Image (tube, rainbow, N blue to C red; front, side):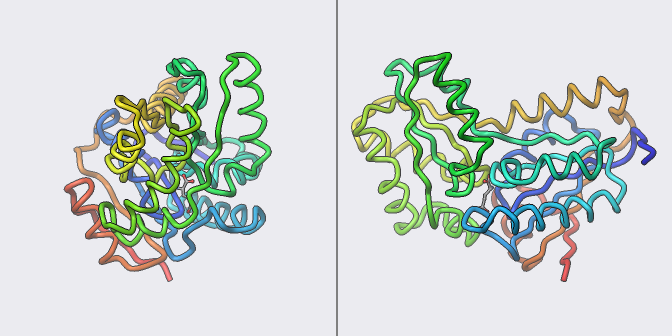
Length: 272
Ligand code: DGL
């Protein structure tokens, strides 16, 4: 697989969550061509069997590889936990960067030594996450409280970022973590930064004056940049705004979401 510096970078998620990573990539690497794939027709991944998540992730990654990418960002905690090994095995030459809940930065910042982790059911049940949690807990003496946020990805996919239903759901997941002493909350799903304000206000409402919220989108972007530099694959020539998006659901919904969350209107192609 020949790699060229002017080849695009592929970024994918089960839906729109990966835009919370894409926004950092656009800032850090403004000259790169980006292909974003929202697998919204199959979202949420978080309630699916591991094998189904692996199959979808390989299909989406395969589509992006066919499109000629030089690097792939798996901007989905659920897909990273289930499928990153399978992706790396299938395309060993490709730069592949995944995303994981930020337990390490959370442990470094928590004063109460109790950290709440918000993620999908599948991520929290994965071997990869359990291993990470045990490793960080053993070295930091922090206690991690896991909370699966069932239904939250669906609300965000619908664009309901501040509705009463979404706020109630967030409250229901956040309040028990604060009641148990958590002072730091990890956003272990790339959709959740888009309801960051609701999460913060739920924590305040539950009595935590200054909650610390951990999002790893920026750390993932730094890792991508480091790997591109290491292999001399940074592009210096493309003009900005070289972004194309694909979706397995409706193009007009994704268009609305790009416009409202990132204030941009990329080319969008609907994949059937
Ligand atoms: N954005 C995905 C993640 O980071 C959401 C998973 C889902 O579709 O349930 O885990």
